[in-house]
Every structure is written in structure tokens, then in C-alpha cells.
Image 1: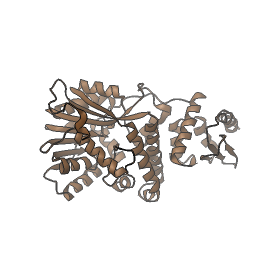
Image 2: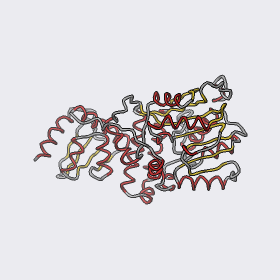
Image 3: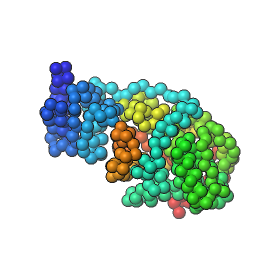
Image 4: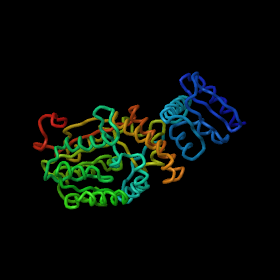
Length: 400
């Protein structure tokens, strides 16, 4: 009786939205169409206890319910996310919560290594199932928007190396090198001598194998190493999709380490995700809790203003900034499409729970970038107060 009464109240509130193309199917055979148009999404509620996820419909709760098998959904992923956002927004208006208070993490070496292993060491075959052939797991770069994923990822790497004006004989450090695509390209096409570092054992193994296969062992080294423990000086430094793991407290240390490792006339680029929410105390509709629990333990996204301030505090001057939010929305959408297309294979590689986590995560990230909840910035920097002799006067060289 308790659930029925609460559900009736919730249902009356939800029926006021003509733009909610949702069908609910209950455990007792009852069915409700909530919008005025034909349903695009169906949510099946297998037991009365599962109604609690609908009565408090944050994106976090809805994602958790699907991952744990409490709710089943049918429909195109994009439509599912749009409906989930509407449920979360209306639930908040009716008294739902926005999200838990945010507390910055310590990010010790051990914590970071464990978090990286959790996320990246699922299996290389798993990542192959939805990434491009080069296995580039970061925002692609679309010159026209019509490119396939492999072309756009190649363009991204070339865009980064061209922005940094990488030349033959340069030494290059790639912090968080993934499966080695950037350092391989930097050595093969730009003539650099490269070091790539990662905390993922599976990434290191495959990246080193690719270096050997390319005959580049004399010019590319892949090391299992924390960024805080790197020694040496480099003409160019790249960090692509890595600093999301650094933590807000460690941003000054991260950028001061980059400063220590950079040649006096060198250039560095930080390519990373930022939140567009200036209030770090909450996560939009609780969506950050889902990623924290299931996908990126201890992951933290700073605002771009925080990044630029920490960069300056670390002794680096911002020289060039580009927002690639639309590019990452498209990248994640293509990953999600690949994930759906190869779902039969992926289900042989991971358990059903992991499959559901990543299905929600990839589609959810595309949704978040599309709606400007998060963004992607490429920031080129050099040592503050220097002449920045390596940087050309005009940006024209980046596109020639």
C-alpha cells in the first residue's frame, strides 16, 4: 500500500509533462504512457521495491538501478538519456536531491594506481571493441564533423603535435600514454624521441609491443611510472585525457612537476575534461556519484578557471586555449554506437554488470558533453616569464 500511494502521487506529477515519451510497465501487468506522443522509451519495473529509484530519480539513482538490474530499459540510448534527464529534473523539482557534497581526494600514488588499474585493466580486447584501431581513448578532432572515428583520432594526434610544433630531434614526454598511439606518431611522422608513461600494466604491455612491432625501440620508451616520479628534461610534454585522475588538491603539484620536466624554451599541452559547474560542492542531478562509484574511482573534474589558476601557480603560462566540447560529444557518441554494435562480443569479454556500467557511461558522457555539463580544453603552455621562443607569433601554422 505504501508503494502504491507514493507511486500514484509521483505518477500524477509526471503526467503533467507532454514531452516525456515514456512507457512504464509494472510487475503486476499495469502499463502507463506518460507523454502525449508515442513512447520512445520503456522502463520495466519488476518489483514494488524498485519504485524507490523512480521516486528519487536522480541520474545517479536511475543509472544504478539499471546497472544492478533493478530496472530494465528499452529504446535508443540517446532517447533513454533524454528521458532520464527529464525524470531527474522533474524529480528535483518535486523535492529530489541534486547530489552529494563533494570532498576532494588525497590521490596518493597507491590510490591512483589502484584507480587506474580498475578502469583501464579490464582487458585490451574490451577497449578494442569500441575504440578506433589505434585505440585512442580521448577526444577526437573533427575538421568537418563527417569523418569516421579513426580519421578523427589521427587528426587529433596530428593537431596536438602540430600545435606544439614538434620537430625532428625534440624529446617528448607523454603523461598517460594509453596504448601508445601519440608517441608512435610523434616518432614516426614528426621525428621526436619519446617517453610514454602509464600506470596501467595492460596499456604498458600493448604499447611496448606496438613500439617493438614498429621498430622504434631506439626512439620510444614506454614506462610504468607515476608522473610524480619522472626525471629529466623534455622539449615537449603532452598530457591527453590523464589529468582527470590527478585530483583537485594535486593540480598545483601536477603543473609544477610539468614545469620541472619542461625545457626552458619548451611547450606543453594539457588536454583534459573540465566541469562547467563553478560550484564544486555538488554534482548535477547526482550524475557524478555514478562515475565515482562505477567508472572512475577518485576521478575529479576541475573548472577551466581552476585549471588556469593552478597552471599559473605551478609556474606555467597559458599560451593557447581551445574548447573541443562538441568534438568530445561526437567522439563519445561514436564510442557508444560501436559499443551497441559489438554488444554480443563485449558480453563475452565482461560480465553483465560491467557491460551495463559501460553502456550507461559512454552514452551518458555523450549526453553530458552535448548539453555542456562538461567540456574538453586543450591548453598549450610554457614556463611563465620566458620569451616562449618556441611559440610562433601566429596560430596559422597550426592549420597549414
